[in-house]
Length: 352
Image: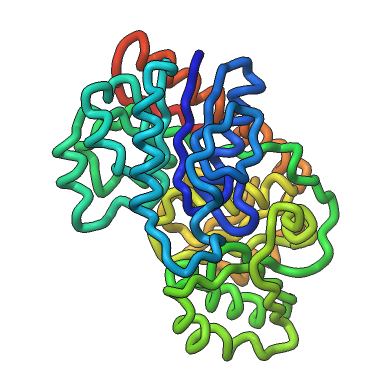
């Protein structure tokens, strides 16, 4: 099958540091090539991929040192190039939210659009009512709740390349927080859990400009404690050691998380996850097997004491069964084939 993958241009593919969507696209693209498909990736020039690369920008936007740049212009230029080559593909798989809708309305049935973000935003319902012909993929069933009327073709949960994550059978005695410093990610909860349990907490997280004030006012004062170590943003090459050394990943979110990639990255290392019951968490974590799902700080503190009851080998096995890049790619191929034969009909291709 001839497949185009169209990624956002904010991060490299895969990202050098923090980044979710572009990382998933990188792993999906390579897995599709390994399954024997003819794949073309539209991305910035520094992409590392097994597919045919069509470079549409000299580098990803976030780490581009240019003081003035237009993300809209960059994406419009990319979509124009995809449109110019559209007849070369059996399916065009977009990961660019809805910006491509006006340009590909005449061939929507030959596209797949995976929505990677939260969907409870004021202006979104009008867009998905205006362009109802595009088959949409959710990354969790919970993600769909704000837009139940949308043209959902499937739920396909994320997967990651298993070989990039080393299994760690024995942790090094600390708790981990990995991701982004923001109010909805609740690093303050992670710090409180660590202090209450007397466990060291290592925080590897980026601080966006939009969250700088929150970090400086709410989080930075909490870091002055012997149990808390703030590392900053880390890349893929550091994740196995960081996550594999942890007794558990703390995922104390306070928002409708569409998926939560860091949860399966921890599982790939054999590390259990203690997660607050929000968004997709119940679709990713199997309580009592790959981690613990909690409702409060008291429950999270209690979960820390129960970590020795979990098997790190079993956690890695469940990652390989449910969340490998190959498993994700096969679910997408099933969807591509079904849409080509029968047209959209919503199903769940989530991992069992």
